[in-house]
Length: 446
Image (cartoon, rainbow, N blue to C red; front, side):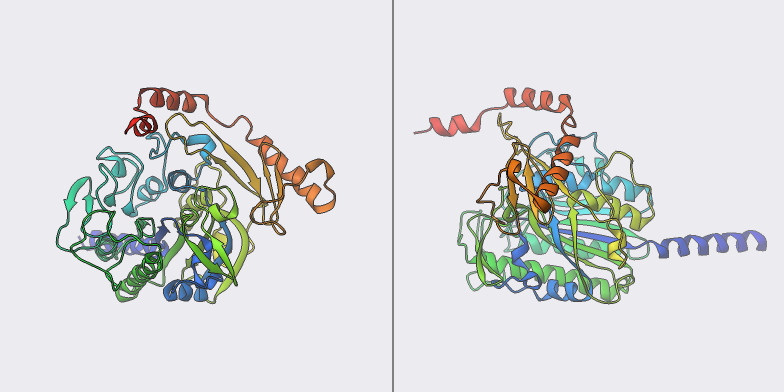
């Protein structure tokens, strides 16, 4: 009996040691939040002290890019695969896809998602995609998200009518989840509801009214600054809870935006006006902040200029957790860069972008690096001299570095020429044909 007890104790010690080596992982993604919004990046319009602090002690990436719109980015981020391979239409994540939650759950992680969903209305979809728990807005319905919101806990509707604030409720869930799972590795994917329009007061705004109902009340662009400050505050609550629980040291925390800031928001960035570019294929639509914090691996603050794609997060999380990375992904792990090593930096980024709403099959396809950008239709831009892409250059007349870049980027586009599965477009056309055309209905109203 003593021998058995000793063996059990040894096995438990080995298991605890193995768990201790695995980091907790938190991935925060803010909705419609461009690179220019963070003060540490050069932003001058908003207060982001928590994010600035994380950047000072962690790694701040200068060239992280997403797709120009929310659902395409979410699909690419969660699967590690470019949209050309698996994007069906707006608001859908194909049920055949494997997500980072699947992979970390299989490795023993407790998994949860909280915040914005917008990936399909079936009640069990978050669990289908590998999340043990979910606390979401816009899952099976679309009620208000801010004052007096409607949310869903594991697919069950929960409505609030006593002056509650949606982003605070979601943050409360996040704090509760990591508290309940502090003894073993956890993975929290936190796609925030903020800072998407409607731009309404937060509980910290002078104009806050707990009796507010719906998403049309009290809208004003000025509240974007309040929403940014509240976003920073919610990140701060999360970091403080990690400290309180004693798990901050071995928690990998990653912070990004899902696409550029809303086009009606103008900010000051490095001494100039900077217009939000959500939905556009320019840098204003794809360039987002990225900050990483992992005290156990990051002993001093660094700035990294490597190219980062949202497809790169899945392999990075897998490598950090000791999980085998699937063969069919497009992402490249940046774990070495997080640890201060050189790694294998990307030489290019690639995007296949099509909102694919109703029967709109328009596709924008492009490849780029820090300095140059080439579209499938032949448009070529010098991003250093012309970051807003106002002056197209003729590829035939290029020389030197620009010519070399055009050749390399052309090779990237050629690589993905036949990557789009025919059955995806067939499925979309079938769905579009059977769906009511909202545009026509709206046009027909008097």
